[in-house]
Image 1 (tube, one colour):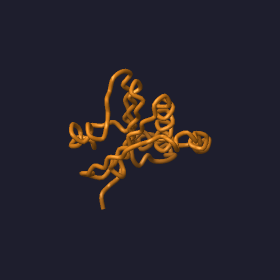
Image 2: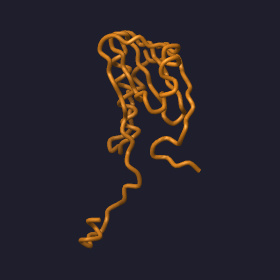
Image 3: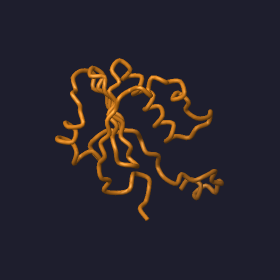
Length: 134
């Protein structure tokens, strides 16, 4: 609007707002398992579960893929904070404009390959934020 009012040339257009990342940290407590999530939260996973969630005391990290419709539950133990930060930074790098190159922390965290995880799939009821259905 400012460019139209002042006659100054526009340098570009923001086509869609960037998707923010939803995340949470639970410092103490928090028992989480596939059975507990399916029993108590399955109907609300799409909208009511954060994309990345850390249960610090329990050593568990959940990571939700909003585009494919699944949640991975990592039993990371003492490495839970490291896993959480790595995944949070990875999600943020995908959703922002990168000036200095990509995100390479994955290349250095060989321990991640040995962390056990479970997967819960849930139905997507609409296209993910920022995408339109065809």
